Image 1: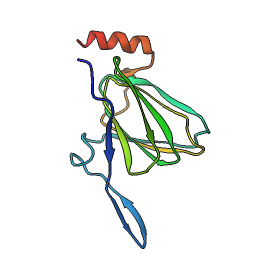
Image 2 (image 1 turned 135 degrees about the vertical axis):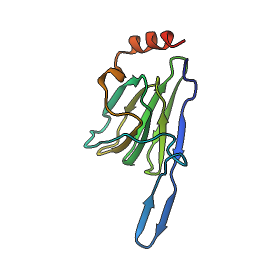
Image 3 (image 1 turned 90 degrees about the vertical axis):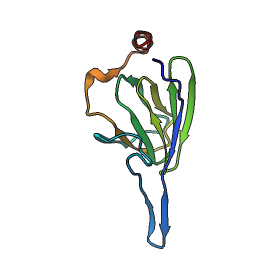
Length: 138
């Protein structure tokens, strides 16, 4: 079954006061999956690129904590782009979505929440294999 939902933007609440900002997210209310893994992408270089893969099962929530980047998403039928540049705004990347992060501002930092533990067999790292995999899911 092809995933036709591109993109799923997410906006987390911000509580602001004289001490600063607090951004939070709650399972089911803001994050639509149980979080089994988190990781950061940091020390990026200007105009850097990351990603260029899809997951068979894993769902991701991607937030840009500082800096900015273009998130490119492809479900095999439609391509779209999302600019992430605010720490409370992110994108949900469903399984079977080819994605890349490109055009980093210097020192961009991402927080990534994942629905699954790391499994190298969950990755589709070749675009042609990704397309074949989508066909096999029908």
